[in-house]
Image (cartoon, rainbow, N blue to C red):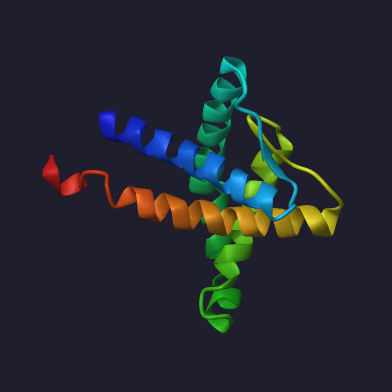
Length: 131
């Protein structure tokens, strides 16, 4: 249970860091953590993002296996961006603003950054084999 909470916090940190980078790039991915309520909403939003990625994301990745094979797996990045876009539309701690195309580009870049930062920070977490 402790590892789950630790991974949840690492993902929240990744989302926050991605929002800082996308803000510097003038994209519309925003996180509001100026208050305790905002930080709690971010944690809830990260939990919703994880749930959507584990359920709807898996289903979409299975359905789009032919496209992923053709693009050598790069289409899964589009699926990740779509899941982030859906989670951000709920405005639970993070949101994406702008037109449809601009907001999808923001979701795509943010999902790439979240995956990268989460992977880098995940190196410092204990392995599941230690149980």
